Every structure is written in structure tokens, then in C-alpha cells.
Amino acid sequence: MAECRPVGNSVTWRVFSSPEVGLAWAAASALLERHRTGCCPSHLDFYAQGLSTATDLDRFLAIPGASASFDVPLEQWPAIAASVNDLRRDRDWATYYRDSGKIHLNLDLTPALVSAFRSLPNFVADISTPYLDISNANAELFLSVVEDAQAELAWRLCWPREHDRGGLQLALNGYPIWGNEGFPGHSVFLHYHGGKPEEAAELARSAGFADLDGPGSGW
Image 1 (spheres, helix red, strand yellow):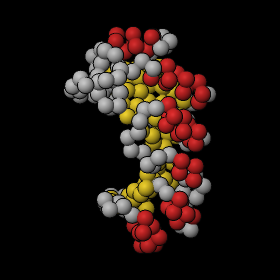
Image 2 (spheres, one colour):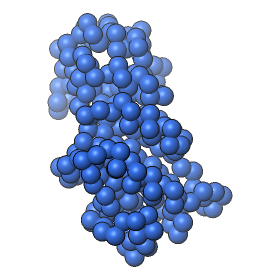
Image 3 (tube, rainbow, N blue to C red):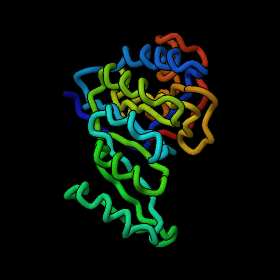
């Protein structure tokens, strides 16, 4: 396996946007087919934001290893802690942020957690995953449950001529990426290491994308 030497940030270009999630996924797949194997370790992760604990969590139970996070007002913490204490993990599970007066809670997303929150006040929740295999099956599973949630799929991988911080993101339902307010619909972003826009453009063209919107900051 070639050595990875991440230096600085990637640069990102938006290469495709569409109101149709199927078309955006096809565009992302076209680029994914060009990733380099036998180089750096690759992985896929998901993130969805702004979900309702009362109505939106059940469908994400299908995602392997998913976690749910919430910001709980300090005055409501005793009741919340009593309800979910048996579901806590051995690792740190709650962090108090003095500036906001809220406690940030992170727990494994399980049927028991969803059930516990049905008897609690409604909170806004975010969903995230650990690193998963980059197989299309994992991405398609997430796409099948995301519905109207603002969310992203992020692939960290190597491109044929670049293995420093390469990757791809699919931003769904106007998910705001890298400080912008989000683009309407669903957008595909190509990540490439800085200083090589001609190589990024060549890679995009090889997948059928002639126009690159950017550059912008990446990971």
C-alpha cells in the first residue's frame, strides 16, 4: 500500500447538481468508479441534521452503527438522563457547553433509544455513522431512508494521480457544505488536494463533467 502523506486541506469543486436524487447518485457513482485502489485506506460516512426525535428517527435504525446526538437544555437534563441512562455507552456520552447552557448528548441509535424519546419533549437530532465500507450498498441504504433530511454522504479515498485528502461528497436537500448556505437540490463535490486544478478538471471530465464550480475549501 502506498504511503499517504496528508498535507493541508483538499480543494473542492461542485461538479453536478440536480433536483433528482437519483441523478445526483448516478453522477457520484460515475466519479467513484475512477477511485484508486491499493493506496490509502478508504471509507464512507453519513451525516444527517435537523431531525425530529418525535417523528424522524425510526427510519435511520437501518443504518449500521449510527449514532444520534442532541442538545439538551440544562434544566431538562435530569429527566433526560434518567430516561436514557441505561442506554449510555462506556465512553463519554455527555458534554456541557457553558456558553449555550446546553448539554450535548451522543448515543447509539437503537430501537430502545427511539422508544425512550417518544415519552420525552421533542428535540432536534443529528445522525452520524462510524467509518463504513465504500460499497454502493451502504450508500444506497442511506439514500433509501434520507427522504427530505439535509444530509451528506462523504467518501474518503484516493484518485488515480492523487492520494492526499482525496474524496467525494454528495450533499442532499441543500445540505450546507464548507461554510456556504447550501445549493438547491442535491450536489456532488469532488475533493482534490490543493494546487492541482488541472488534474481535478481532468478527473471530472473523465466522468463526463465539463464544468467545475469552485474552488472552495475542503477537508
